[in-house]
Image (cartoon, rainbow, N blue to C red; front, side, top):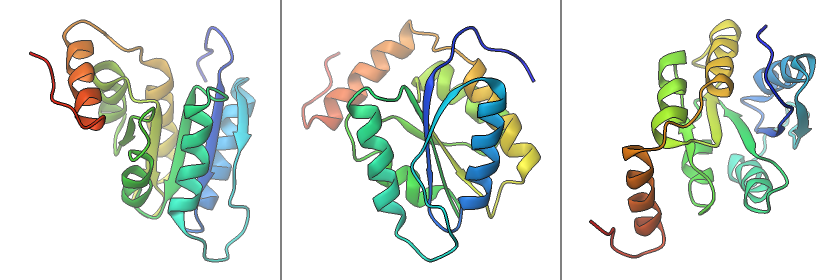
Length: 158
């Protein structure tokens, strides 16, 4: 388990379809020395994923957490919900490569995973790639500014 330079505050949330994977990732992050905030769910009772995505997104927006991890059955619903928030750049990642690209090129701050489609070992590899990869900036920063302009309802500047 690679060490990171400084502890970050990372929020995690899941619906009933992603709770077990969320718990595994939470425990892994704590063993790694990260500051972790578990926002639920804590049981197998059916819950609505947008509620948990919103709870986590608000932690990113208010600066209380720097990164987030959302898990549902496929990761799709969580990523759609979280990306409704202006401060969130949520990426549904299915491999370590997509996690590296989400961070390096898109400065993603929320990792979305699907418990029903990603096994525990692969999920840990994806998480590690997400945590270890810095944003490259440069031409990618220009593209993020254009995304922000679109999100704000404006037109991107050339």
